[in-house]
Length: 460
Image (cartoon, rainbow, N blue to C red; front, side):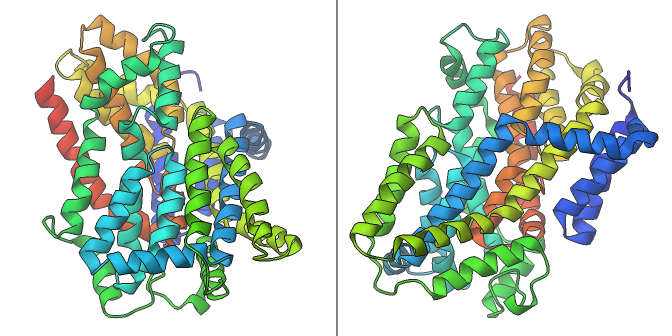
């Protein structure tokens, strides 16, 4: 295609529709990508799909993500099998006196682990789900709390992977001077309205100030009636890849060391956060260093033979394959949307409304639509910042407010999209079916988005 047109919105509509109907996000993304490629050139669908797949798999970000997710699964498997996670759960249960306190504990843990949204989603979900199960809290509610303290929290903290990445983009695109990317980023933090609203809403929902409604209410009622916690279905009747992964982790808890020590959980998690910070907010290097310390530490205690430990780590890596597969499929789909010039079409459609007063709200609206449709938060920001920021300068809009709108849209897309990496990992860590998580949290994410949109209109 040489010019953006309305047909570029067809693949996202296909993906969202199929994801809901089929409840198989990877299949929906692949079909959506094929539909998009048919719109580009119906005669070369398969060669173009092969090229797009190879391009994605050769991408350094995808390689990093596979290593991070797989290694995190390996670490989680060790924490579970040695009884460390079980010990944490026992101690957390002593502090949690009921539904509200256990949800607030989950929320606070999510706020504390602000380094990275992947680290947050996987750690908090895996750590707290047996506590919330005890009080018959649905996995959907747990996943909502986890997801709402993943990307939104990371956006608001300047010592996070999000801040490092976006601060670098601001420098690369001339928005900030060399060495002042984080400083410019920090100036926009007060204006990241969606992230603020999403984070504030969680305790209000947990305490019942914001009532349950829609799919979340149904999920909570089913959990309170004592139906199985995992998607309210029998684990013997698993039917989607993420169900298989969650069942595997549940079985690991059944074989965990009942006499596990709390320090065997706290030390690796503490090291992971510390090493991640030490290596300039690089979770992959932090995971490597953590495993390099944790494995000898467990061996010294004779918790299990080295061969069993390595086998356990491989099983943990396997548990992350559904999440990895979904994210890879989402990146392929994003590449197809870029070929169809979807970002340019959305921006061009809204450009007549881009005045200094309306620009922040329009930027938030258009970027939120793009991030939700493509499942790409960082990628969309990288593509659109060279378009949006010169426009902000041209109409003399508040630069910090526009950056805040862009980051708000990114965090909304990361949380709300059915197949974004953060949503996938929040569901994975919480042991919740991906589509169930996405459908139940979407109304709350939309409420936060509407409030943020109104806020941008008022602040401009």
